[in-house]
Image 1 (cartoon, rainbow, N blue to C red):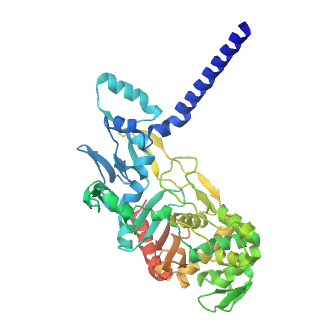
Image 2 (image 1 turned 90 degrees about the vertical axis):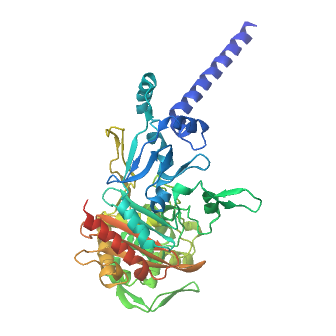
Image 3 (image 1 turned 90 degrees about the horizontal axis):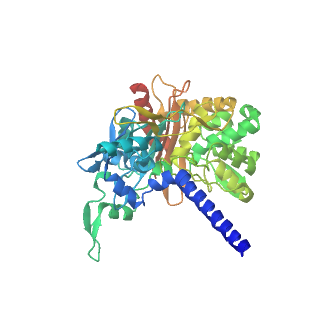
Length: 476
């Protein structure tokens, strides 16, 4: 009898210990995420007693603020997808969701202040969040896109700060809850309901969630892999006859370029040269090179998901046949990327092969302006060696100086870039451009896509040019 009682005691004690450990795990590791989860009803109750903090851009421009019991977004549609919104009915998105715990003063550092405020009967005020975005650049990017579908990304390759993240079409986050009509069965429809039904997908952040064939901009990755595998590639002469037959598959080119060296091949965007280089590399090394640039990786994995993100996709090497490899090497085939990924590719070349961890958070400050948290630049990936990056950088300068990217040229500034005109099975060709400047000491990287826009050098390059001009003429 005593043995049974002892066993039962051990069982109860063991269960209590396990339960305590589990509760501790939830509080310590899952607590912050659960507390700020948009589906947590207690969050809404808590928020009702807090004056939510303000979101500012890098120059102090207000991106989101609370006034008269409601949240407002001064930039409207120009920053909707990245800043996001808050709605009791539709939840919260973007930076509003990513940094809830700071804006509502729900971090561990805020707990003492919360207790003091309660004891003194003071209203609770959330912390302010300052982000790396530049409202001026964000608005310029949206103006340059106009009514066209597409996206513009601008970032600083030296530290990973995101300067602009524009996506078109967009929407006004100030109006999502307003009535906008009735459904066939008589129910009231809001603006948000109609946005969800819109075939133009204005709720989608094309800059980070888009899935596009990258076209010839992907030749930067192929070039990096080829040079890493065989540095002597830079000395070779390639004979372009206007097409390449790969196991019976005809891969076409824009022209018969004749004899071209490596730099000239990139300048004129020679498909046959880069398809050959991809084939020589082999599927495994080609795939490894793409991963080295972060193609299939989420840069925010393991930390706050500042923006919704779709990692790129590429046929695994074991399933990639030679025609697929040749097509993938020129950014066609089954390769799909978003503009942000291609900005990171250009950033690697601009920054001697190193991709800095991209981020939007600059700092968190209390209501009195005291800094509670400051972001610091950190390397994310080493894509290529400085030597390989230097060779590709020189070739990218040729692209803008005398090749397909002349539409991005600026007087007195050395711009490096790569155009792309990506074939699209669902419509017209997508226009691409990625580049950076000044090439000698890059301060800004820009990636542009205009859906169904046509030639990248004609349509996307001028947009990038104006973004680069705005950054370099505005100062730090």
